[in-house]
Amino acid sequence: MPPAPSQDLNAIAGLTYPFTTVPAPGEAQEVAPGVRWLRMSLHLPALNLINVWALADGAGWTLVDTGMNTADTASNWQSALAGPLGARPVQRVICTHMHPDHIGMAGWLTRGHHCRLWTTRLEYVTCRMLVADTGREAPADGVDFYREAGWDNDALEHYKARFGGFGKAVHALPDSYRRVVDGEELRIDGRIWRAVVGRGHSPEHLCLHCPELRVLISGDQVLPRITSNVSVFPTEPDADPLSEWLASLASIKARVGDDVLVLPSHNEPFRGLHARLDALIQGHEERLAGLLEALVEPKRAVDVLGLLFRRRVGLDMLGMATGEALAHLNCLMARGQVERATDAEGIHRYRRVN
Ligand SMILES: [Zn+2]
Image (spheres, rainbow, N blue to C red):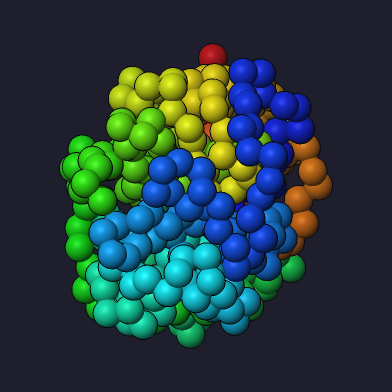
């Protein structure tokens, strides 16, 4: 899933990008001993490429993330595997999380190479759940959720028409997988890669930290130039993913040293992990403070989109933007700073607690 429509327009102080070249789709570039950087095409409103990684592993490769299920991605993989990856076998596919740009080709790769998908349990199970919605009609709970947030009928019709699209971007998921747990040490080519789980962007997002190489594969948990989407979804309207997100960023700072080369899923590899974590936390805290200020007058979720996003939010981004607004509102409610009331039309209105 792409990041939020908000972009960090200003360069973050303290970040450096050590590579002056980027691999074209189908190519591979070494970024650390045994670690190759590949990029797969995406066709998303806010993003056109995802980074994936090939780790040398004995006679073959362990792949980390897979791209979205499209003919372009299949062709990118075929070129990469036959060319720069030297036609060596794929021995394992690790996915950081269940968004289609990451897990979309996992089934295609694991079936084609007779190997196992490795990921966390909540990512695997949640992906199975979302794929199972493909072809279903939009549920009443979902329509109610967005109506309560202040959507008009046009927006609700757009939601209904697009519901169930998740599965189209995911090749048939493997029917079994290998669970990875937080703190687990995976051995890849004789080196330890420690699993560092984060929450908030997705339920149990897997980062991989190799202390020996001083490399962190950060997935969407830490991106240098864009902020990851942190959203409330209709399946769990009272969720507080932003508190989980902020706690995860703090936990990564405590667990992973500042000397790592960070390999993110979007933008370019960078150094300056702790500066980026601090900036992400500070950015959300500033948005929360601004929101709190604005809620002296009661507002609907849709009324605060202009406060949270610099860009105008069109229909194609409305679900993600509303989810992100609700993440900030639910966080303020969990902190006891905001209360929610339901008006006569059944719309939720949020106001600052005096
Ligand atoms: Zn994602």
